[in-house]
Image 1 (cartoon, rainbow, N blue to C red):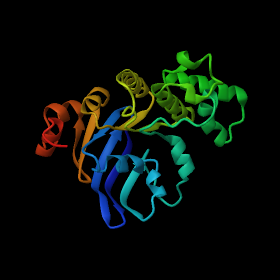
Image 2 (cartoon, rainbow, N blue to C red):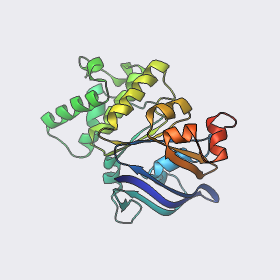
Image 3 (cartoon, helix red, strand yellow):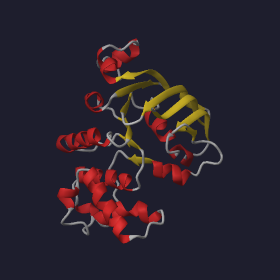
Image 4 (cartoon, one colour):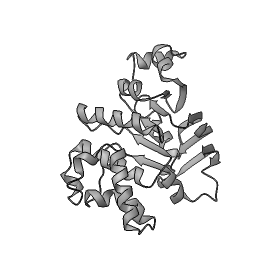
Length: 250
């Protein structure tokens, strides 16, 4: 079943066209990786799905962007509700200046949840889903800033999961991390796709090959090729894709 998709999407920052007629669909409970050189439109495309681009001035979007078959740019859409359904993890870990527990509980509290036992259950479950519970269970009320970079990123993933999204967007979630922490994030992505649909932007070709079911290659704002990851890396149909994945440019 298709979880999220774009149909003939064009996006302009003022006079600059950042995305050109992008049509792409991501199936439920799969991982889709977006690859391509810097400035090719990957992160702009990712941010379509939780309307993060709305925060940028002088932006124009044409086409359809669908989550569960609903166009999320229709006038009646509640953006706060959309962002509960579509979680986001950023490039650099960005924990709040609060305790580990309150970082995970934050989204629930902001959305009006006051039931202490429910919040506690959600915090524990989310930390377990983010493969962090065993490392922090005895220091939940200590500052999130005491955690290592890799732990902080997994905490941010737990925070995103706590509000029960069905889609998780990840914008280069391991680019600021060491190899061991990166491996943990990759293992986590494999586990999470059992319950979530994941779209990840990555500059790391090996990472895309390891974690994703499908890969999309973007170049100069265009979706050049999209298909099963194994095919994109071993038998691409487009010469630009072939040159990029073999390291000839980019």
